Amino acid sequence: MTLTAIDQSSQPALAALRWNNRFARLGPAFATVQELHPLKEPYWISRNAALARELGLDQSWLATDEALQAFTGNQPLAGAQPIASVYSGHQFGQWAGQLGDGRATLLGELQTPHGGIELQLKGAGLTPYSRMGDGRAVLRSSIREYLCSEAMHGLGIPSTRALCLSGSDDKVLREDIETAAVVTRSAPSLIRFGHFEHFSHTDQHAQLKILADFVIDHFYPACRDAAQPYAAFLQAVSERTAELMAAWQAVGFCHGVMNTDNMSILGLTIDYGPFQFLDGFNPGHICNHSDSQGRYAYNKQPNIAYWNLFCLGQALLPLIPQQEDALAALESYKTVFPAALQKRMRAKLGLLDEAAQNDDKPLIEKTLKLLAAHQIDHAIFWRRLCRFDSPEGRTAVRDLFVDRAAFDNWASGYDARRQQQDSAASTRLMLATNPKFILRNHLGEQAIRAAKARDYAEVNKLLTVLQSPFDEHEEVADHQALAGFPPDWAAGIEISCSS
Ligand code: AMP
Ligand code: MG
Image (cartoon, rainbow, N blue to C red; front, side):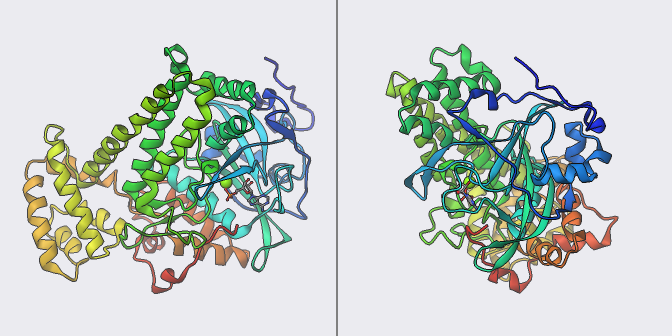
């Protein structure tokens, strides 16, 4: 294993940085060396101090022009090995063939106090996999990805993260003429289901094995000792994906484009496009205006994830001698997902006693039916419910319902169950489970509008609040509005695949 030497003379602040670009060393079958495609006169939009600290990056260096140029893809970073990787995938249920990093440049893998973390520039220009695209990302979608990946992390939901966001006045043509931006995102690995599908569908079985061994050795080492390591790996990915789906459903998150190339092999939320956190609770909600069939509607996500895992299982079959072993590995999803969701829903309701957990299923279903029937604001309902034990708190929940009788009927059943809980402990659990702040579409939209006018304060304010979404943030009066109902115009926001 060789570490690439760092040129300390040109980057003194980076002297402590170490790169170990393990994915790049897999070789040319997996990725292509990526050249720089500079953007004109880049400027900072936001830097994520919290993540910089975690990565062990020097804060003052991150503020420099050198960092700005490096994270816009304008200048090389010593020790990095920029590449674009090849993958394929199923898009909207159809085999789409080769895709790949069409606008993402993997800088390399940084050695951090938390292990190896890959840094990738999204929107840094053309790659061999750009197909008809321009290799760029526009400001609005980059702000959404930057904020949402950190919001998910703040919510405790596995996600890629975002270190910084830079922009340029260089024009990018979408439906309108827009400007370019680059998000520097990070994750232990950015490998997708689609990477495995690629090598399987192109009959490159030696490469498929190299990739599977790489992921198992670095991220799923326990599978190595199993009788069938690749089936064990499929099961482990199924379980992580099941946990992720439970987390999405519980918080009311719609991804919008759950193609297999947008599914992380580590069970992370990845590729933020037309995502949305629910406002009113509509289980059939479709957040992506390009999704005419509603394939990726909120309530379809758990089944779509299972379908996607089948594609992964299919791709891994050359490595799993008995098909039954692959099927058995996938079966685990069917038990892990409902159990994980039930655990999260019970926590949302503040139910602490484990003994009666299966008896809570009807209450959970009744609650979700109530919210759906009356289109109650998802996040506000759950947050207000945290104070149900106080008379004012209970009234605040009741006030969400026009049909008070329907609420009272539900509340009497909930009341009975609550009597069996320790009120203080239950409230604490609920406040740590039901966030006060989520990245609603209109909040993102407000930040985007301000940023287009070169005011980045809103982006930075949202970043701060969304990184600790369970806190009240009472000390800042200005933050309280971020926890309010969406304005009427929010219903008119249309987010599509265009990004
Ligand atoms: P997405 O829908 O963002 O997950 O992207 C699907 C595929 O299209 C991936 O291979 C992306 O890299 C590629 N892609 C999306 N937008 C662009 C773009 N502007 N330029 C080049 N490739 C793109
Ligand atoms: Mg994608």
